[in-house]
Image (cartoon, rainbow, N blue to C red):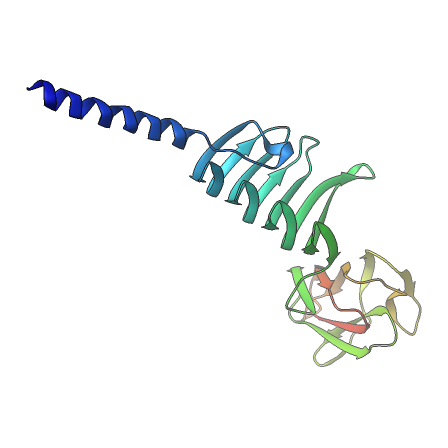
Length: 227
């Protein structure tokens, strides 16, 4: 190999080394995430998919050195947020896990500029769980009042032959009067649970029934539980 060829190769290797070193330097600009970073990079900043470990930990999408897009952020205190980000701030739909009043708690909904602004859900209600329960129907009867009242239904009519009724509600005042069963002055989103025993269709055995539900839209609601 000629001397001229050697002189040609050396600069190429030199510049290649510089390029590799430059690519390895990739900064995360969020202060609590500065430390170690692994992932995609653009112009010396975390950009694309990656994970960063500093005082806190984040894995997900980045833009210009900040969490941006979708990702999971875990604080050093153990709190965690899974959802959408905008340049380092929670912004969009997400779920926040934290510890409060001696128990694990969860908030899900919509954030704007790192502030929680309320439930984000396309539906007005949802049934989370049911056992020995058929349909659960939700009827909004008013926008001017705030309550959740339950009806227990069989064969198209209200059925009162139930026992061991246990109600749980996230807010409001429980009322089990002869007129209605449920929660007055409820706050929304409302999360409720009803557990009760009832005879089966042939009255030959007792069914243990349970339904868990959520109502996201404020108002006066009738929840009909068909079993």
